[in-house]
Length: 163
Image 1 (tube, rainbow, N blue to C red):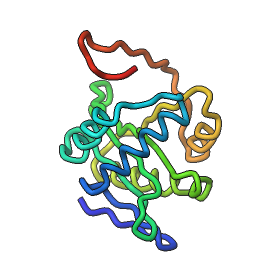
Image 2 (cartoon, helix red, strand yellow; image 1 turned 180 degrees about the vertical axis):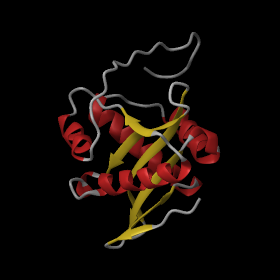
Image 3 (cartoon, one colour; image 1 turned 90 degrees about the vertical axis):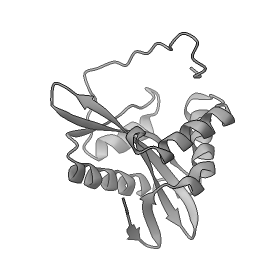
Image 4 (cartoon, rainbow, N blue to C red; image 1 turned 60 degrees about the horizontal axis):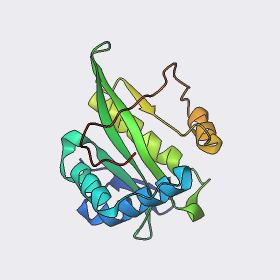
């Protein structure tokens, strides 16, 4: 899949193996900024690489300006038997601090919506920390609404995944 969207010398494209280190760094920064969590670099590197290398796990989009990755997000897929289609989940959103509040997420999300429409996605979902009011306002401004669901999780026995 080739994605090229250019606006004011900024382009959006699908991430490649060359972007893994930027994506690992962005995920570590996002986890610290939003939850004060320190992620294991080795585990994260393997997880990001798995998404980049295996299309069935999802994909990352990156925004790039002047040969520097400045923002990214990941898309994963959830099958809905009730609706007979895939929801696309937007995850791991990160924009470098100096590029925030300039519409980068809006452009990334518009690209996700276009790709999803072309692929037959039935909707788009994401989760956000309850305290992250800035992100919530951004998502609402783009037409997303709060769902009637709470999220629960349990880690599998023996899992090395971090909580």
